[in-house]
Length: 336
Image 1: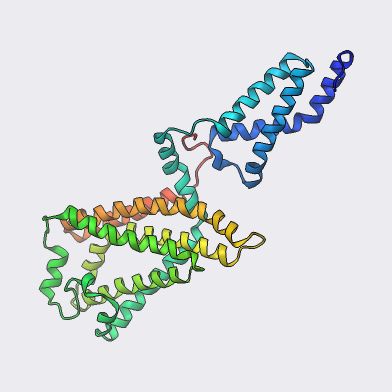
Image 2 (image 1 turned 45 degrees about the vertical axis):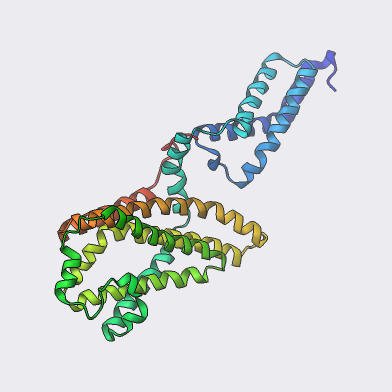
C-alpha cells in the first residue's frame, strides 16, 4: 500500500510499474475505435481483456490511495473507452454492413487468394477436360451433362436451335428463370464450401465436375460454329459466377487444409479459426451469385450482341479483381 507521506514517490513508482500496460491498452483501444476489432491480431485480442482488468485494478488503487487527480482521470477515461469496445452496444446494422463490404469481405478474400486460385484452376481444368472429351466423342456428353440442365442443347441439336438459344430474345418469366439459376449456382457454391470439412477432397471433385459440365456444353456449340457466341453468352454472367464459386471453393479448401494440417492446434480449434475467415468469404460469394443470377436471367436474355456481352463480362471481372485485390490504406473504410 502507498503511504500518505510518500505519495509522490510511490505515485512515480506506480506509474513506472504500470505505464507500459496502460499505453498498450490505449493503443489497442485507439486502433479498434479507428478501424474495427478485426484490426487486432490474435495476441492483441487475447491481451485486450487482461489489460482492461489490469487498468481497472490500477484505477481502483489510484482512487483508494488518493494519487494525483490527473492520473485518476486518465485511467477513468481509458477504462471507459475500453469498456465500450469490449462490452458496449454493437455497431448499427447499416454500419456493420458498410464495414463488411468496405473491409471485411475483401480482406478475407485477399487472405484466401491461394486457395481461390487453386479452386479456379480446378474449374478451368474441368472445363478444358470436358471440352476435349466431348469433342473427341460426343457420346460422352450424355454421361457428363444431365438432361435437366442441358435443356435440349446436346450434340443432336440443330444449328438453328442452338443459335436461337443464344440470340432469340426471351422476355417471358425472366425473373423466375433468374431465381432458378441463382438457386442452382448457390447450391454449387454452398456445397463447395461445406464439403471442405471432409479434408476438401469432395470440394475439389465438385469443382472439376462443374467445369466438365461447362466444357461439355461449350463443345456442343463449337461443333456447330457457335463457340464464340456461346462464350459471350456465358461471359455476361460467368465471370461473376465462376469467381463466386472459386471463392466458395477456396473457403472450403481453407477449412479442409486446416483440418488436415492443424499444426499445433487441435483439429476442432483449427477448423473454427479457419471457419471465421471462410464464412465471411462465403457470405460475400452468395452476394456475387445473386448478382450473377440477375445478369444470367435478365441481362443475358435482353442483351443479344456478342460485343456487349463480352464487354459486360470483362468489366465485371475487372471490377471484382480491383475490389478484392487492390491495396487499401488502413483508413479506407468505415470504422466499426
